Structures are given as structure tokens and as C-alpha cells.
Image 1: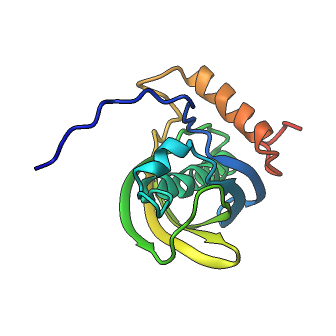
Image 2: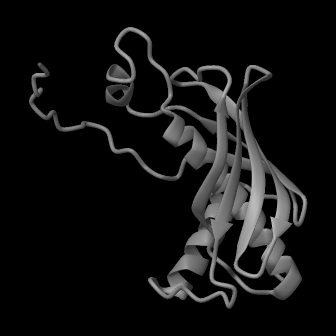
Amino acid sequence: MFAARPRQESRTDLRWQLLRSIDEVVPGERIAGRASTDFPDELFGDHFPSYPVTPGVLLIELGAQLAGFLVQATVHEQSGLWIFPVLSIIREAKFRTFVPPHAEVRVEAKLVSLYRDYAAVRAGIAHDGARCVSMELALSFDAEGEARMGDAGALVAYSRSELDRLASPWRPRGEA
């Protein structure tokens, strides 16, 4: 029988800005960046006791976030539209090696195909030079650049601020 543990309030916020930098962007082809698994220690206490491992869902999110910037840059270069890619399908995810807490990782993504309202990408994460995770993802977006469930202006401003925060070498046409 399982016993419920009392819920403990987290002392640290988990933010969804998981990437640390974008180092290379070739719209229509590839993107590379860096991240860290500096998540709250409470997360690792249960995943797993005495053997902390970064949860796969967070590793997939790292790949999806970087891939989203690649898709966004690609569509913007082709049409001038700001689109807001969202992870919609995890076609495949292979976890080859555990990623420990507080690890520096390299994240890469390559565009496989781009359609009117979604893109297919392959992404990977490496730690200490070894491939840890490989994944195939699909990201969906509104082909007209609209944000039906949000404020498009706020999303564009957020995208621009993230490109600045991540020191991305790619900038939309006409922006320094």
C-alpha cells in the first residue's frame, strides 16, 4: 500500500525559460544552443532518491524550445511573419544516457520539413560530448502568424526579448 506524503511547498520557482544561449542559427537548416539542468533540488529528490536524473519531459522541452526558435526564424525569413510554434507531437524520443542535475548540455535541432502550419524537426542533447537524448518532434503554428488564444503583440515582444536574452546570432530582417 502507498502512503501519501504531505505536500511540501517549493522554495524555488521552476521557470520555463530553459535555454541559456543560442549559439548558431541557419534558418531552414539548423540551430544550436546551450542549457543547464539547474532545476530546483526538490525536483531531483523524487527523481530518483539517491540517484538524481533529469526528467525526460524537461529534456524534451529543451529540444522543443530550441526547435521552436528554428521554425520561427525559418518562417520569418521566408514570409516575414512571426509565428509561435508549439510542441504538438513527440514522434520519437530515445534516452541513451542519464543527464545529471546541474549539468551543462548542448542542444541542437535540424529542420526535417516545413509545411503550411507545422514543422518536423530532429533534436538532440549532449553532455560531456556524449549524445544523451535524440528526438523527433512536430511543432504546430498558425500559418497566418495569428495568436488565436493569446495576444500576438505580446508574443512578438516575448520572442524578441528571448532572442536578446539568449544572445541569438539571428535577428529578424531589418532588426539589429
